Image (tube, rainbow, N blue to C red; front, side, top):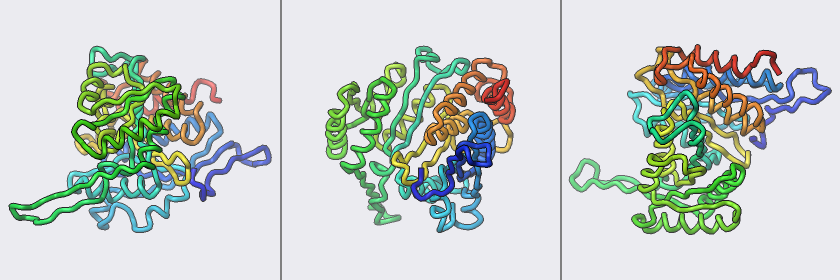
Length: 376
C-alpha cells in the first residue's frame, strides 16, 4: 500500500458506511481490447466487493497510444504524481500498430514500474479443467507454477546507445545491469513464495555463455538460498529450461529469472497453459511504499478489438491478484474459483477457447459465480 495514500479507509463499527474496506483504484484501459477487458475486471471486482464488504472507487485515465497520437505522449508529464496516492493501478492493454512498441513501453509501463519500484513481476500459470493446453502431458491440476521476473534492471537497462547511424559501421550497444541489491531482493521474494507454496525454486541462468552477469546472478541466488534451507532449489540454463518447460511443465513450481529471461519464460509458460489471453500479471512493490500495477499480458490484440469477443480471463485473474495484494485472499480465491467453475461447466467460452460467447457473456457468468446464490 502506498505509504502516503489517504484513499484506503478501514471502516469500523462507528462508520456510517456498509463497507469494511475502501480502495481508490487508478483504471487505465489503454488500447484495443484493453477497453473491453477492463470493464470485465471491474465488474468482477465489484461483485467480490459486495460479498466481502469492500468498496472500490475508480479514477479512469486515458493513457494510451491513442493519447500519444493526439497529444504526443502516452501520459502527461505529471502522470506518476496523479496516481502515486492510489492503492493500486489496473491496466487493460497498451499497443497500437501505428506507434512503435518501444515508444509505448518506455512512455508508460517502464516509468511506472521503475519510479514505483515495482521490482517483482509475478506471473502465475495454471491449466484449468475445461481449458486444456496444447500439450498432451500437461493436465489440469498438474500444471500450477509461478514465474518471478526481476522487473526493474537486468537486460532492460537504459544504458547504451547507437553511433554511426546510417553508415556501414553503425553500431548499437546495450548494457545489462545486475546489482547485488536487485538480485537479492528478487531471489528472496521467490524463496519466500516457494516456502508458502510448499514447493521449490528453479533459477534461470546462462552462465556458460554470458560471462559476467549470469555468474554473478548465480552467486547471489545461491547466497540467498542459504537463508531458506527448507526450500529446495536448482539452477537451469535458459535454453534447457525452455525445453523442459514444454516437455514437463508440471515439474516446476517457482521460477525466478532476470528481466529478459523472465519475460520470455512467462509468455512461453502461458502458451503451454493454453492461451496468453488467459495470463495475468502483477508488477509489485512488495514493501507497499508505492502502488502496484496489475495487468493481463495478452496485449491490445488490434485484430479483434471492438468485436466484443476478447477473452477476459487474463484481466479477471489479474483483478484477483490485486485483491490478494490488498490482503483479501479469500475474495481473490473466490474469483479464481469462479473462473475455474465457468470453464469447467463449459457452456460459456470465448472464441479463442473454441466457443461463441462474447466478452460480456463470459464476464456475466463469472460475476454470477462470484456472487453466489445468497450473497455473503
